Image (cartoon, rainbow over the protein chains, first blue to last red):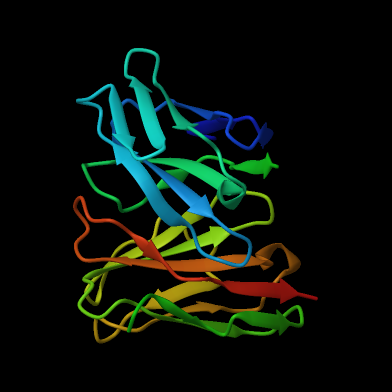
Length: 113
Length: 114
């Protein structure tokens, strides 16, 4: 059973544009929602994370929007750069912990010049 | 060390062979996790240690998979009688504490079973 659904599977954005990746979850016990960035041959690296007591969190060009009632959250990358080209994973866990993360299937982002 | 270190980076095993994958977590990190990442998929949780105690092994796909962390530092994931479906990248992550701590991932071990 896929508990975290992620879309789109792939995304092509022009340099300077906005990249938007969406995730939906089923388990209402989830209370920690991180986004990970993964480059080829590397492990995932934490980008930004949010807890359900806030609806939005911004760090630099990266913003998470969270809709608790819809059980959805999204990642917005503003002013996308070629260096942002990577695979992005949303994830979720429960118990206020980063342990036992349930990951989405990933979005391959390509930022073109 | 500077980060989570995994070895070997690549492993090719013949079907039926046993393999052992090593993880050196960040020094002082209490929690250690193993994940399996199939090609084109997100990582899937395998098991979790807090110090030397294996607190959750619910993600281990079969009794051919075994993990240990005897001294609360280095961990080994062992797969017995490997099958083709075991081919994947095995990721190790560690965090300072299991609650609310960021999980830092290693580069993974790519296992190919032929």
